[in-house]
Length: 575
Image (cartoon, rainbow, N blue to C red; front, top):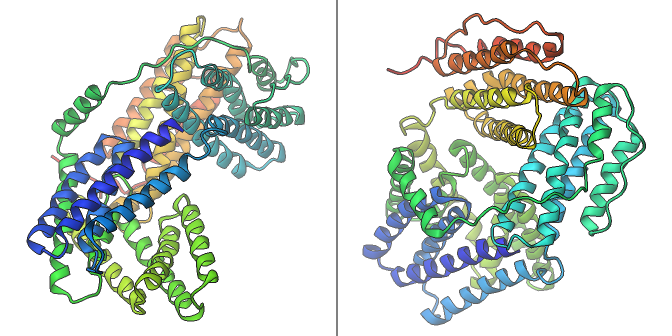
């Protein structure tokens, strides 16, 4: 909740300040147009400073535009700004109202979700559903990322003596061997006992309710080794282990890193130029095309082309389709529902649906935000043509982005997934190097766990980028679709490495793979990354013949076969 207070408090303060400046400049094009363009550029640059800065930058742009576009309604400047500030404070209060009774609930739910996803993944294996087990593994990765992010963010504000957060982080860390063993079970196809699945479900319930942790089920069986390793890993859950506290990064250091990032390369500046150009064109269209509430054009452009929100093409299309659906819904409500308690109920319903749509799809968010705005504006102004104006302005904004921010912008359709794919292959190579060697100290075990998390997080991010790009009707979209088999092969390769590591841990006296075999796996992944970056055929590489590495070798071979997926003659390296 403290993290939430800082995040939302900063966004609220930025929104109020932006709205105040926008109100001062409204009605005067000499001041409002340059103000909006400058704010758009600043917002794009600030977004590169981190997640909290990105949210604040979004509020800075949105409410500057809304302030400059607010029509003259006879209300004084002070009253208008005061009402807006009061609404902002109310939103912040509602967001933090549960602090006194649910102080650690968000973190508990995040850790409990990891154990629920573990139970779901093992249940899918028990049911023999391979597709469901793969989907469950991706959900487990996302749950792990969320839990670590929340706990580390929360602990960065607290003293190292805080027992609650220390216990939750220790529990999450102690679950890592069980996660690795569960992945090995999935990779081997062994069906886990129902008692293990029930234990993870009970564990999630206990964590969420702050109750004593359940005891692990039964004695450790001798075979098969994957199931034995899973049982052995359960015995470590709940054992307290002191962890070092992560020191809070000073504000001066964060600002210095952001300035260094801006000065280190042209990517952020190029994005800022694209945002500024499109916003400037939108401001020009406002004065050329006679439409009602034309500031919606600028607002649409800024929301679609925000640099850290994913595919510009995909967001423009989803925004347009969602607005069409929302306009129809909003117009029906305005025409058929008389003013009164029923309209208030529909406003609440649209607000709830928008909150759900926000985490599902940008199109769903637009589809429910649009009728919410139409109904509110009709109630406050009595205008009946708001729906049509919303549709026209959104269509113009989407057209500006698609033409000038996507079709005509240099490099917007250039393939980018290959470079990320190569980076992920190198992360997996680092993990394999640590996982396939003897783990004889706590430090080496921690290092292997750290590299495993980095590899799976990189795979999760790669899948997200793929989902953003695959919708584009361009070379970037075609390459993303062609690289899909390689992404799947790398995911299964990482699972295979984890499975070998778990079996080696279980058989502590077993001889680990030869040094030369581990080195050959690293060289093979390096050749894969090189072939992807250069868009060339991979060279022949030697692979280990150790039977214990058969699954790893099989997935490396599949990844090499997938390198020939894209049309290599189309994607020539530059220079």
